[in-house]
Image 1 (tube, each protein chain N blue to C red):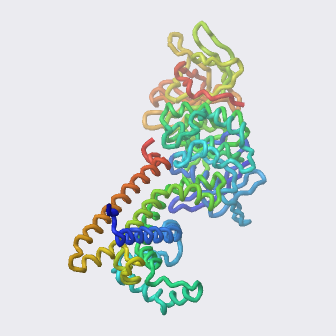
Image 2: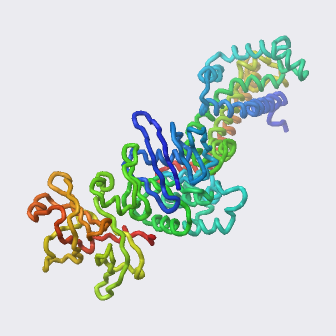
Image 3: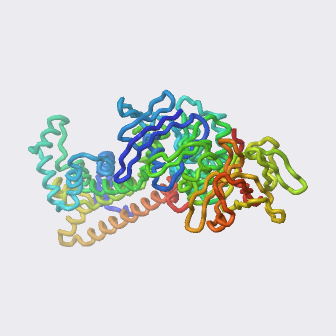
Length: 368
Length: 237
C-alpha cells in the first residue's frame, strides 16, 4: 500500500491530498495542467517538502511531519522518470543507465541486458543523449529509473513531450513492463488515451484535491465526473473478453458484461481480456432496433442517468444490464432527439455503435 | 646565427608565463568555491562577498597593488605572519607578482564559473539525487563536469588578465629584471629610455604572438569540450 497524506501551500494554490494506492499495478494521477498531479509525485520523490502529512510505502515511512521523518531524496529508492527525461548530457547512454545502479552490483548483467532489451536501447549505449530522438531519450530515462531497482516507479508525464508515433512506440513497452515486473507505478498524465491503455487505478486530481479514485471503467462511466474524465474526448471505458472470431467478415467477437460486440479483427486469442474506449459521440440511441441501418452493434440497454451537456446536447448513461455494477456506455445526443424519443430514466433502449467506433488503439494489453 | 629572442626578452617571457600560470593555479579552487557560494548559496552577507570579489575590477590596479604592499611588506601584518610562520617573504619576488595577478584576475574567473553554474538545469541535479547520489557525488559527476566550459573560460580569461597585469604588479613587487619584470613591465621600461623603441616593438610583437597562441588554444579546447559534454543537447528535440 502506498499512503500519501499531505498538505502543502504553494502560493495561492494549496495541495490537500489523502490517498491510499494499491501496492501493485499502475495508478494514474489524471487531471488538468496545474491540478497538482506533479506536485504529489514530487512530494513522494522528496523533491517537494509537504507542510504536514505522511508518506509511506507499506511499512517504510518516507515522510511524517508529526514524527519529524523526512527521508532524503537519495535514500528513498524511488525511480523517477521526468517529462523531459533529464539524462545527463555529458555521459554516454550506458553511463546514464548505470548512474543509479546499487553499488552492491545487483544490477550487473543480466538485469542490465534485460532492461536494455526490453526498451530496445542496446544499439544506443555508446551514444550521448544529445544524439538521441525524444522517444529514445525517454526510453533511456525509463531504463535508468528501472536499473536503480526502485521500490516504486514515479512517472511524470513521461510521454507528454512526444508525438503520436513516438508515444505509440513506448506505450507497448510500458504495458509489457507492467506485466513483467511486480513494481508499482505512479503515472501522472493528462492524456486519457494513456490512462485507458495503462492504468489499473485511476485517481482524478482537481484543484489540489482528490476528486475520485476507482477503476478506470467505474470512473469514466460516472456522468458527474465527466468534466474531469472527458475533457478531450468524452467517452466510457469498458472491459471485455475476446469470445470468438469471424474470419469470413474479418471481425472479432467480444463479450462486454454479457453483451456481444463485434469489432474489426484483433488477432487475439479467445479469452484475452481487452479494454475498449467508446466515445460518447459514436453512440446513438434507438427505441427499437432499426432493421435497415448499417450499425453493426446494437446493444439492449437501459437509460441510467441523464445529464446536461453543453447547450444543445445531453449526456446519457446507458447500463448494459440490470446488474448493480453493470458496464455503462455514454452517449452524447441532442436535446431535441432525446425529447423526440421521450428518454427518461429506466427506459429500455438500444445503443447503436459503429464498428469503427471502437478504436483499436485504445485496446489495452492483457488485464487481470 | 643569433637566437630569436635576446636573453632579456626570453627571461621576461618565461617569467610572464610562470607568473600567469601560478596566478591561475592558486585562484582556481577558491574561485570554484566562491562561484558555488554565489550561484547556489543563500547566506547573510552574500552581496557583501559579491562586492568584495568584484572590487579589483573597479578599483585602480595601483590601489590594489598598494593594499597588497601594505599587507605583505616586511612590516605588514600578513608579511610578518608569513615571515614568522614559513620564513618566506613574497614582497618584491615573482611569487608576489603571481599573487597580484591572481587578485586582479580572480573576479573574472569567478564570474565565468558562476555564469556556467547558473546555466546548469537544476533538474539534472535533482535527477541525480533521485538516483541515489549524495551531495558530493552530484557535485563531482554532474555539477562540475557540466560547468567545465565556464571553468575553461575562467582559466583562459584569468591567464590572459595575468599576462597583461601591470599596475598592481609594479606597485606591489616593483620592476626587477629577472624577478618581477614581466613583459608589460619590460615594455614599459624600454619605452621610458631614449633609443629603446626597437626593443619595445620587439616586446610588443612577442605579446601579440602569445595573445594569438592563447586565443587559438582556448578556442580549440572549448570546441572539444563542448562536443564532449554534448552541449547540443540544449537544442530542440
